[in-house]
Picture 1 (tube, rainbow, N blue to C red):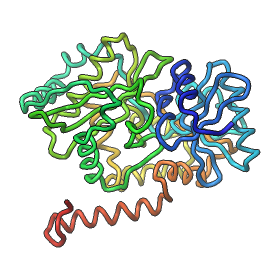
Picture 2: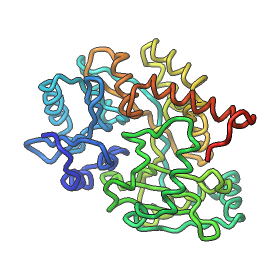
Picture 3: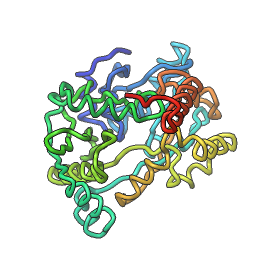
Picture 4: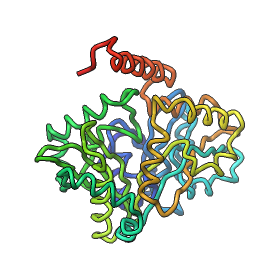
Length: 357
């Protein structure tokens, strides 16, 4: 049954949520399908004749196969294909031998055991240097009630400044910038302040079935001191450890070199496209910068992340549907907007256009 029933979905997420993105189905704009005969929910959005699913069904592990079959039957009844985006290894193993599904690797996510964070900081001088750099600039980190955070004008200003600094318009779906506009009851919000004013903030959501957390947002004003983002992650890891969390991730890094072995199994056309994107699309979306930031924090391991479509071979149309789910428009229009913004920025820096305010 399709609807947006956030309270029922939250109850299921907080019982069975295993995928790192589970809590994100409570973000604005995501539809919910509930299995008729058991506690299970699928978060999805419709694009290009396809239902783009947030990672995997949220349900008991042993029920996943039944829920997949039920949701795909629902999709067929509505003339739609299905593509599971940001699927993890458990979903890949479930469908790996299915002749009706195609699996591709799209990147990797770094993971930590927060209980080992003290040792990570103690053995990596570069991490300590970044933390000290921000502390020496007077940056402090404090927790804020997420319900208050969504109404806080200072945080809204930080988010607006952060979005203006990006070449692409805001992305959505599993990278929704308005995460604090969704269900926030179980989220962690940390705010970095300097001289009392917010300069950055971090939002983390629970991965209930793994006693873990996804750090889903680290939003930093352009004038925040270096090391501010690292200081927020440090505060989050210590919070997770204090509550006994054994798992934490900063989420997907698309096209990550840490997924190179898995990406080699992708179709040739897709490998070529991904290589081109990593080499030439960095001005629009900072693939390399995201990966470098996470590598600096010395993750314990990197887990491959997949997209799985219910077709015999993964198609260009499924890839375009994924792009539209994140962009909110066609990928080509998004790139055109990004190119125009990048050109305007370059003309501004050499004085041919006024700087944006």
